[in-house]
Image (cartoon, rainbow, N blue to C red; front, side, top):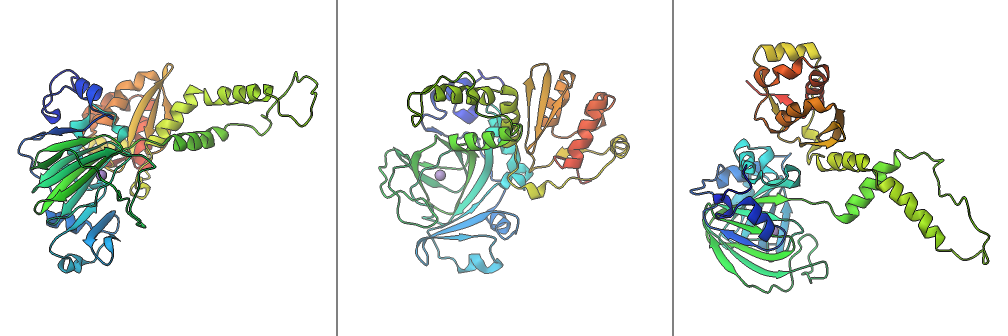
Length: 388
Ligand SMILES: [Mn+2]
């Protein structure tokens, strides 16, 4: 993808311009971001997904048993016959992991790191339906898939913004509306984190939310230090060799801070461990139970490939890679593996190719490390055989 060619998806902006002027900063409305976009799912099919045990879904009913009633799926078959005519919405999470045509939409966003992408949530709303004025802590692209939705934008919010009293939903008590647009299929709205927004269906409508994720500072600190601590021996301790005699034994002197800061810096500054932790953390799957793995021997794998078998990425797996000095790190669904630098093209292929087969794997299957890696990924479940 060329960062300097204008993209229809971004309303004619280049990826570089969009990232410079809008990303994480301000909203952007793009008419016909995907011209003549046709939703790969119908409202009935979306409702069908919400009956499935393994799929996360929610219903928000504005005038339900209490205002803004929230119900969590999976739902019973007859749920939809008993809903009011209007003012309710169904939200289905991570549809990209279940419907390949929805996963394909993510290819439009390859100008951003794939590990920043959370999921594609799809909502269906009856006329008037929505989840109330709110803000999110994440970037989102709202692609209109079917029917029309009115979006109202509001103020920038933070943790101090007043919310309605509600056990489950974070609805803003005060919404200061500014811009307002009606989106048609193919139109898209980008919203930066913390910008208040309020979407309501004009008619039966479906919206695709391409959501991003970013770890909180608290998550980075707690998870990284937990990870680091595994590598630290109990003998390694605060040390005050060179301590001067103290005048008041009850005072904590400031030279203590210097020693603590040095201890923290020594460990927190380990770039190799930081990278390893981050790659593992950011590739942790949303649904680990969907990454089962298959016990397989190298020879069986080679035979299967020789007979024309196709390997695909498990739709629930996350892959990423990185460089560390002369070596490479592959991250696969929360695991990492240190690999020699000559496997760079294999790693790129594993992460990006639609399918793996004898042709694109052949040169790597003759390499011990390469062959072992492909086999491990099948065993671990990040790669799986395509159903014939
Ligand atoms: Mn939102």
